[in-house]
Amino acid sequence: MLCLSQENLPSPKTILSAAASLAASAILFKTIASDLIPEAFQKSFYSRLQKLSSQLTVVVEELDGLTPNQMFEAANLYLGAKVSAATRRIKVNKPEKEEQFLITIDKNQGIVDSFNGVDFKWVLISTEKPNSKRGGENSQSEVRQLELSFHKKHRDMVLRSYLPYILQKSKEIKEERKVVKLHTVDYNGTDYWSSINLDHPASFETMAMEPEMKAALVEDLERFRKRKEYYRRVGKAWKRGYLLYGPPGTGKSSLVAAMANYLKFDIFDLDLREVQCNSDLRRLLIGTKSRSILVIEDIDCSVELQNRDSEDKPKAVEDDKISLSAVLNFIDGLWSTCGEERIVVFTSNHKDRLDPALLRPGRMDLHIHMSYCTFGGFKTLAYNYLLIPEHTLFGEIEMLLDGAQATPAEVAGELMKSDDAHVSLQGLIEFLRGKTDRT
Ligand SMILES: Nc1ncnc2c1ncn2[C@@H]1O[C@H](COP(=O)(O)OP(=O)(O)OP(=O)(O)O)[C@@H](O)[C@H]1O
Ligand SMILES: [Mg+2]
Image (cartoon, rainbow, N blue to C red; front, side):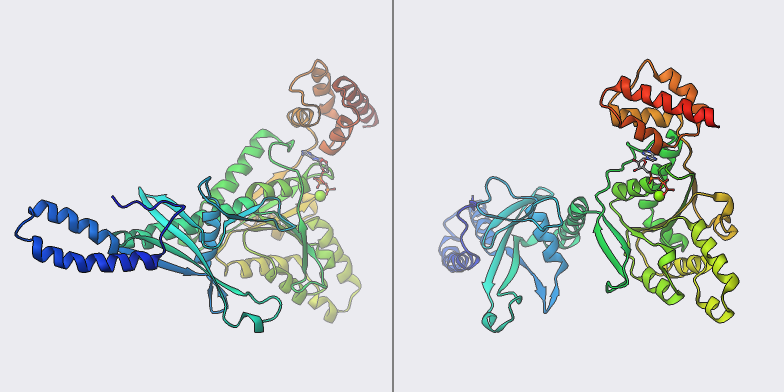
């Protein structure tokens, strides 16, 4: 049987010339052997010979002119995740803003990948550009391409299944590596946004919320994420809106961060107080990316500002002032034209002060009440901060929490005061008693 060891692969050229000379000998062999050698033996000999000339090579170039080839990028990423002890040389890269190493195979290295029980051989070929010296400092001096070789009978499988599979896998790898970003309004930036890594530790596990509400939200997000085809079929924009309301310190902003970390979606934090006119608003919204969460915090305050302004401003100026309905219309209009998933979150401290346009059924998909700390919420915080699932003081805390109207932020503040669980809980009891006395 023909065996190609991974370390010592002959070049495609060598294989071809070997195949050609073997084929020539075969014609001669056939003429002489047709009468002398049994047919079964001839068949097996021919099938072995054919193997040599039946390889198909697919070339995946890095660039199509100046445009990056998505297939190259995907295969490069995919093969990087496939390197094994047998791979002789790998490349390691770590961009400053990313946490993990990026591993790819080095030039002229081969790698064998199995898919559907078939072995596929990949080689990364790199050649120097003939005119590379004339290019600027940043111009690439080498031309890279990946070559995929396999038996030609797998051609359809490669085009229909293997390459799409690699595209899908590379998307997953990218997703896993993705660093979630927080974008804030910055008029000096090209699209009016500037970004930093989110770096917020909030997760659904650490959120102190009613367990039913938490489970409902996670389920809602999951269903939304899987429904691309559904939204397309029913002709609706693939977006979801949430309204988070509750007093300060109940975890509205933390919940947005938890959602972003869970979905690996960037956050676009839009402070309406910084938006002067409709054209700025339009530009900001166009600048948001798909698979992101647009957050408009304290929507009640923004509306207040709007109302206050409109009383003492002449009509002409007022017209270009942004209003909540303009925001909602822009979001609806703009997002109905893009195919990828988006989430919009409004937060408010006062649901009763909100514009009825926002509360209208169907406008926001879920209204989530972030309440004062309940006993269930307290248990989550006690586990987060003190690593205790139970304690003798819990009973007293449960009774006090009932009437104290303490926010999770306040409870968390007390729990952080000592590493000794008993001391912390005792401190919390004093704090809650103080609050109850005052109310
Ligand atoms: N439900 C919660 N679960 C866990 N931690 C919480 C919760 N609520 C508040 N915290 C803690 O309190 C801090 C402040 O909470 P956060 O900023 O999310 O509140 P908020 O509701 O957005 O307040 P504001 O209305 O003032 O913006 C958080 O960093 C977190 O440590
Ligand atoms: Mg907040």
